[in-house]
Length: 145
Image 1 (cartoon, one colour):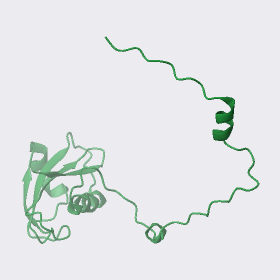
Image 2 (cartoon, one colour; image 1 turned 180 degrees about the horizontal axis):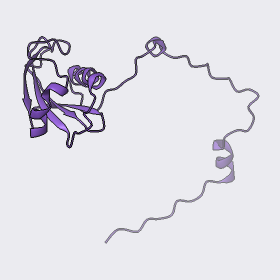
Image 3 (cartoon, helix red, strand yellow; image 1 turned 180 degrees about the vertical axis):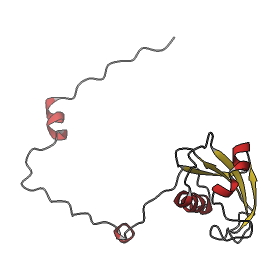
């Protein structure tokens, strides 16, 4: 069983008068105007990153492929691939993950193995990126472990 709590007495009128905010603002000192920090003043490029962009190459791959992806009108399902990267940012190999991906590899506009693709990878080994080409024209990329 919980102990019962005793009510706290209300402050006396004298105490309440000393803690109540003053309505007299004639002696108030205005706060200085805030200015953006130098880094906030720099024009930033739009952020297209997602929570899944653990390394910058994930967003770079998505941006690169999104500009080039034009889904065929007869596409019946999304195309999914694993793209294995070399540390220099070139493609090591491409692994189609479904039948439609095998049949439409040439339409995906993925660069060929050995071709430049993204920036060099810093200390991440050889990342594997899952690429999803959606029927609606959207491209998704995810770092796979």
